Length: 135
Image 1: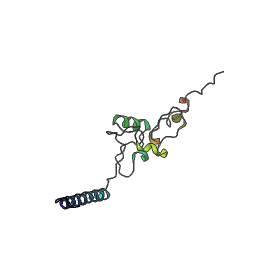
Image 2: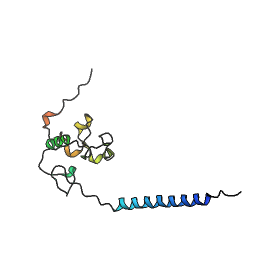
Image 3: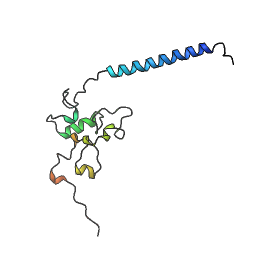
Image 4: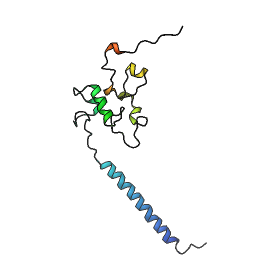
């Protein structure tokens, strides 16, 4: 069986394209590895030393919660909600240590970051009344 006259040219071109694609992939991986992410500053106090969920400024949690809502931020990761990022798709849902574990919040199924829990600041009299059993 004889080869077509230009099959060597086709093979040569295919090898060059494969090498170019492999080189491009290696370059993009190297760029991603070398890219240094700047530390995200705290949304509440503009400090680069910590993240929002570790902020110890004297701001009240109600102030923080309102500021998050006004600026269209996620109440789970406290990051900016953009495009595909919604509360349901937030990756921080996988890490329960970031979520509030307050009993009142769990009973009402309110999922949010522990640093903005409003039930921590409520007085004891503001708790919901106990459920009465049906007889």
